[in-house]
Image 1: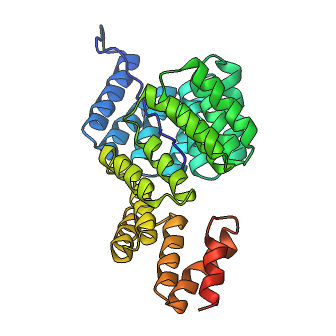
Image 2: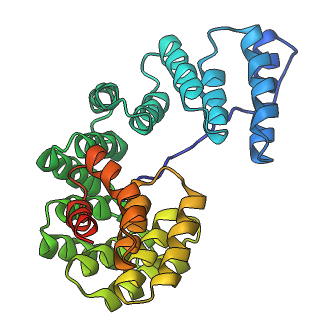
Image 3: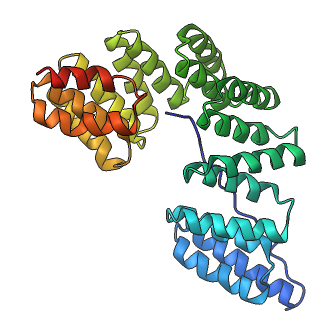
Amino acid sequence: MRTIKTLLALVIIGTAFACDSDENKKGRFLLKGNEKMEENDPKSAMVFYSEALEMDSTYADAYYNKALAHLQLNQLMESIQDLSLAIKYNPEYYDAIFQRGLSYLDNGEFYNAREDAQKLVQLEEQNWKSHFLTGLVEEKLKNFPEAITAFKKASEINPENSDLLVNQATIHYYQKDYEAAKNILTEAMTVNPLEPNLHNLRSMIYFDEQNYAEALDAVEKAISLDKSQAYYYNNKGLYLLFLDQKEEGLDLINQSIQMNANNPFALRNKGIYYVMQGDKISALQYLVELDQNYPDMDLVKEYLEKAQAL
């Protein structure tokens, strides 16, 4: 539900080489690796980055680009290891620290991510990404006032970035302050009305307000702008359940699970579907475990009680 976007930027170096020194050779390997990344071939790219590192085991840029190749292959731990090496050989490597912080977040290492966020603020306090990462960390740690403060600072530095406004609205949504969230989303609409996360979050607010038709319209707008996000389809499926279009809703929830099997909200929605269908056994298979693992998730306890009463 968060509006995080991983910011991948390969290190680019000049292409003119006056002589065939080791420095130029390792630079050519870096460039060849970058070309493979542009061809969406991260495995081959890593071969060239490794060649550069064979020539210079302290080559921070090669570790950084190799880490991005690992990310393309969903190899999170390997990416963190290479980013850590890039930082070891260049302790003030801003982009590597930022990317490692995001990777720590994705890996559930929130306190390590917080340390990286603090480093970024020390290095470049006027860079919006320093406060963006801080906000994401504090959000994960459920320190919501601190998260809002960080996102506000990021937005003040980069007012044209609608994601930063959506992040603020998301925190207000978590706190069930829907009016504050809607006001910020209205502001975000003036910055970028084509931001899909904006429309998805608006749909979630409408759903919580039991405005199911408006929720459906909003999430369909999000899907029209970005068809790759599994949780948009999951949300649409949930709204269809409450609009008494249960089979269509279940199809979308299952589609969401196929796209991303690790979303507990989709499993919750399947449990809700089975409650609505009066299938106690199937409902309990989903909702009992979710109640144990995610006791604060909205709707879980309510529908677990309904399932038990069937």
